[in-house]
Length: 379
Image 1 (spheres, rainbow, N blue to C red):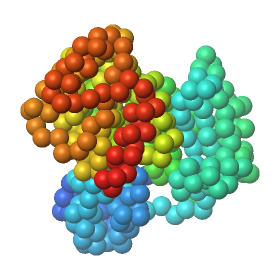
Image 2: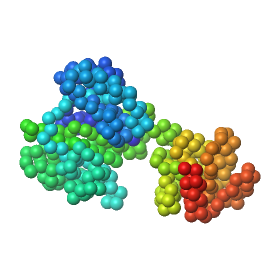
Image 3: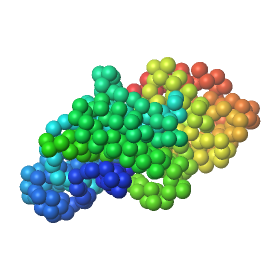
Image 4: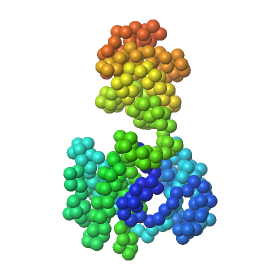
């Protein structure tokens, strides 16, 4: 679950990390009132769960309350990467001497939280990693001990030669680690972490993603979810009990099991295609899940062909076949479907599909290669 910047800032501020004041607003009039309270000169930032806000015109400066209202009106009328801007964060402008990056992620390889810090702040860390990887310093933290004081100082010294600023940054990193572990986060970053001309170190931006598995035991965090700012297909999938992530390709994928889903997407790429989604119907043999999966995928206008790749263990392939038949009877599917079924009740599944004029393959490579060719032919 992604938090809005204003929500992430609240968690950082509660942990004692220094940030400028800021308030969230949903109308131009509210923005004008906040700007007047903050002294007039402010930055207005769209609150949407997507990157590229600045490039899309979603982050703007205003030098007076009246200008802030005008800027807010334009930002609140935007759609950024398909998402409607419903709220903006209003914060005072800050005199900046330097910008750095500080972030924490869960690294699956080391199975530890990993700090990444860089003196190249203010831009995407992915861009820094691709173009100047030597500017990133990494540290895997032993979760038994957390970030030790000397480790924090060592990291901070890669950002600042001034020891006073390094100590401030080290303290911020320690508190960021507390926010990260205390809220079950998978990502927490400050970009930029800035110094001011008078020597202070401040966080100007905050981004936090929470592991969904944390939400059952943390209703306070679950209440922060803003479904109106999420991809509608992902919201629908979650309500239907499906694991779904929308991607930018044209091959829709319905798979059972996360490992098989990843292998399927890799194979789609291998044969020259682009997956349109990650969708795992899980181990359930409920045909309704198949119906819901097809409804969600067919709402994506980019999808030119759909692949079912089912390996029947706990999942019964005949139930999947029944789900495909139910879905195609319930609503019109306007794109071709390629089906690969193997495993539990495979013969019965093939019989069900043949009864309605459908065919299925049992070889995964053949099915993936075929769906990529079909999608390419319709693009």
